[in-house]
Image (cartoon, rainbow, N blue to C red; front, side, top):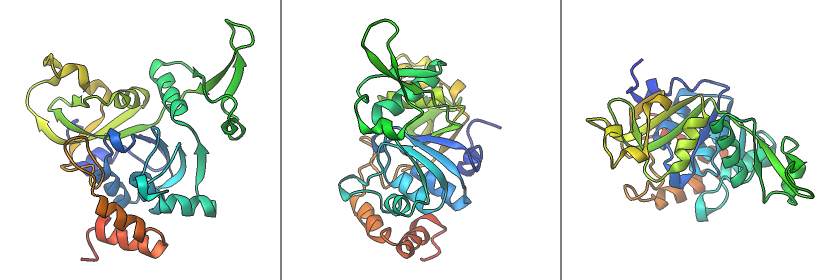
Length: 271
């Protein structure tokens, strides 16, 4: 298939049961793509948030799209914990791997570098180790009395994010968001939504090339204008705080969440 695709075709690589890594609110969240996945009825995804998420994760949880989540937080900013995340955690209907920001970054960096684990400091001594038996504390082989934590590499099936623009070759400009490079390098496939497609080759532009993800790492690109709404997108789009307040109000209950889906996710059947 061509690398430039309509949105639903681009998202077809995300299949039931896959692992999916997504960025935090400040990193370019592919919200239009997320709504499309919910409309499609994707199921049993294993979501990894790098390192936290808000509306995106909460929407997927409420829609029944996730089997598990590995995250450091699901919070709608100052509005509090994601209501569907809280409900699922309380009911025990979602497998939750409690993590922390540096550990999540380290796990993907290990996969990016092709090594089985990444050493990490700062977590040793915390209660988090009690619930993460897959993280191992070992003796530093190059020093005495120097314990170090080893975090196993994580290789997601798909990375999904939104970026300002791409070219017709599938090269994607991500700006200062270096974690997006890590996500793409660590994952088997990467799907990106963008605001626009530009002519030319971004990698041939000395100014843009250093912040451009090469198409070698990209499975598909789709145009989704205002694709992070209602979340902030750098200087291109402000957060729609009123909408997030409405979401939190409705999503406190299952019935309210279904009203939200009808109004804003499905084909506006409530209109």
